[in-house]
Amino acid sequence: MALDVYVGSLTQYYGVADNQIAAFAQRPEDVHPAVVAWRTALSERLGENIPAPLDWDETPAAPHFTGRPGWDGWAALVLWAAYTEHPVLGRPNTLPDEWENDPALARCNAEGFRSRYSHLVRHAELWLPSPFLFTFDGEDVGGHRVVIGSAPTLRRQLADLNAATWKAVDGVVAGWGRKPPPDKAPLEARARYGFAAMVQAAQHAVDRRLPMKLDY
Image 1 (cartoon, rainbow, N blue to C red):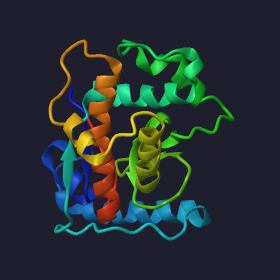
Image 2: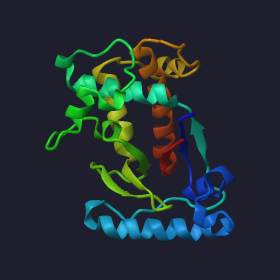
Image 3: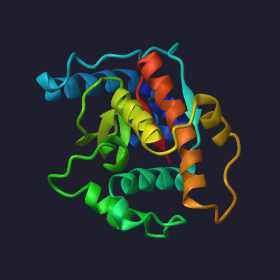
């Protein structure tokens, strides 16, 4: 199963046949009001925890972007961030099969630990165009449980990760994303590929003030 990252209106995302949630399978025209109602309810729930009520372009004309970090690229990037915070554990050379149970990732998610890369390592799948610092458990438009973060904060944390490790300029990063790494590629090669896809998507989300969502 492929892993993509989508930036754009949620109306457009859920209106596409492959992404339609069950309640709208026969009435896709109901997607837009459902998304707007979901956004309003979420904004009211967050209240003073966000700097302004949630708002972004949900019209049919909203731009959209799709990238493909792939599961290996995404997982390697998450672990790259986790081991940057916990270098004493020793970063693995290749992506572990059970990467979600990795000890460095577990430490990043331990109660009370304040991760510098929380919007990467806290299992977020949806990032909103609002500059809040926390992640939280919520529901998506279809009522499925999901961890939600901030696209501007994710973009900053990706930049911080690059500054702490690779120190790569934009042209170099773009080159990392041109070709998927081969099978059995080192963890770092996979992390760089995932980074290139995610940083491009996050920049689109910030520049256009649109949500960003993992799609699988």
